[in-house]
Image (cartoon, rainbow, N blue to C red):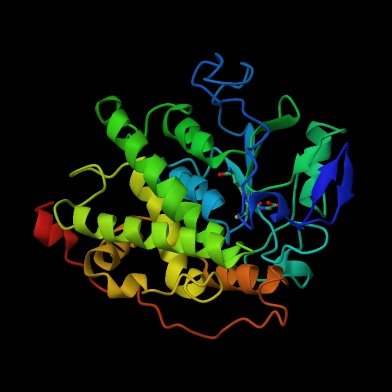
Length: 330
Ligand SMILES: N[C@@H](CCC(=O)N[C@@H](CS)C(=O)NCC(=O)O)C(=O)O
């Protein structure tokens, strides 16, 4: 794990000393928006029109943030329009690297076709030679302007929802925006980022704080999903995709590696049926790669798992039947 300082790579982890052992995630640096007509979005510059063949997405199949964007790309039918590269699951001294399966990398990892880069930080330097900051997945690259449009998944999912024309479900419908934003805020802080706050805490107090907030939120979500099929009612929204990418990793990595072990998702009846309901959406199962997920977490964070041993379990059955459609009538 590391970062760029004025374009120079430094192998350096997050510093929790200044924050009482608490993990604090840095804000993403590239915040432009692809829009249907190229007009500016809520931040950054304009000039990024939604066009097939123009954009390239660089993801890790291990990363829950990148996973959101891969699911949106699939649900919105944008697989032909937006090309994808997959980094190696191992993120070590050089950060995220490209090590394609054909060259002995992990199956599912690909090359980087834009510059033939071997490290993700080279892509950041192409966009901004003196870039200072963390080098994170995912990255949405614009071939036309030769730069990074955005490296913030919460914003990329919105661009994929409505920046490339019609097609697929509207996952951020006008009428539900208030409800979606409210759920997202809770889920981001206590669940999506909550598992990282527990896992990367370096004091007992910081860990306990994150653990308690995480499980109280999961309990609340369990109760909410007893009343409705999806987080914002009867229709699937962006909020569900954002929760899904954490739930699908939970029993495999967050319970053990991040010590989120009060209980598993498999022990929550509603959350586990809900997880399988989302997994069964067309094309979603193909975006889930548990091999990359387990190798990444257990094999990249030497401070947490110094041996790098990847557990063989648990057995997971996301493709087992679920009761959600039957219970909620759709
Ligand atoms: N806010 C960003 C967060 C992305 C992020 O933190 N990705 C992780 C992988 S799961 C990463 O690349 N970490 C490398 C680092 O922090 O140095 C987003 O949602 O896109």
